Image (cartoon, rainbow, N blue to C red; front, top):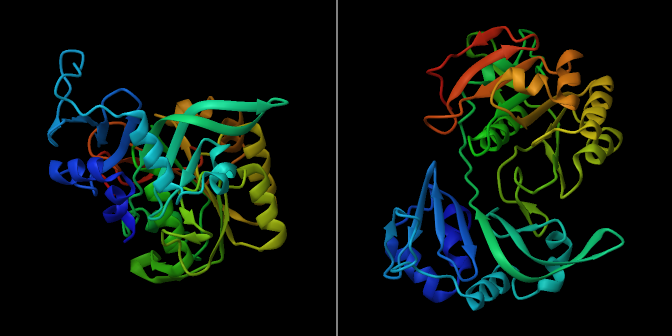
Length: 333
């Protein structure tokens, strides 16, 4: 079993039975947060719910009293981590040093606990006491309304930056843009067919392809190559030199090193598809690395997702100078 349907299977039997009894819809869950000695919280959209000891979803109120809530015991977290890592924490240590690992179905598990460092570098993660299970949601077709604005009349893909506050659907939208650009899509004038192109993805946190044992769990298209768990700044240059992509895609671009790599890729003739945290075009322009990329015209399309309302709602699509080119406040993926 894979995808959203798999998510409850990663937990120990007692917790799994409570989650199944609660009626929680895996398709709506964004995060499950487990903290040793504290209640289990489930994030669905903008709503935070707690799991009761009897297997019901309740709205925390009055400072969230623990009475009647399911309390996560340390043993529950330990067993969960063992199940998620297929009883081989040693094999998972490389990912754990980055603070997360990916499990079957493409779900990403963030971890926190006691860190042992050496020479300023994390060497091993022990005594894991906190888990954040981010449920992977693959929504094919969510970029359908966006794609026609991302191509020129000659079929040229405009380098695109998706701007969004946290948890508003930017990664999901970027993933479907990658898939459609790779496979080809009906996005030309009058709905004409645009052939697919070679795409290189730098998946630093395993959220786009969600690779598990080397295989992407999400569909990124049939002409896509993936560098999994690779730093964005290094990965973009590696792909240009080794895979000759027409389009390079990265999630959550930000710092100066990322900006330098993006400039390098653009100078080599590669289009870019990326996402960044931000609530407005002005906020992004004020960030050092991203602001420079926008000033230099690296990105020809800016897709702004709304910070409220339905997840994935499009605030607007703009050209590189900030002029609206399509969709408005009613737009939605």
